[in-house]
Amino acid sequence: MWPTHLVVTPRKHVESLLALAPGDGPLLAEMIAVIQQVADVVLSREGGCHVVTNLGGYQESKHLHWHVYGGDGLPDRS
Image (cartoon, helix red, strand yellow):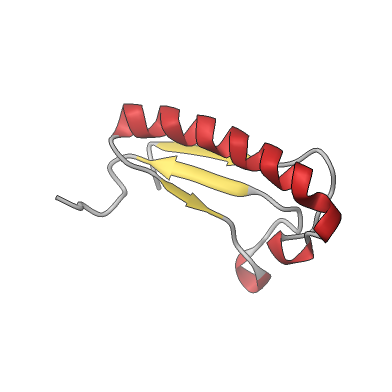
């Protein structure tokens, strides 16, 4: 679908974004830092990217994960 598609997942099992607990703040901060690094590389290579997590019926894998994707499959924003 997209030329570049990476997935960021935590080592600790968390079912979804909605299942994060108040004590998961450090885990979320670490994930955001990794997502920023990955998105920066994709942005520099592809000129744009999306960062997405899915919920409910859209979440096939019941483990929190974030998609970072970019390339020719993205809508033109010029």
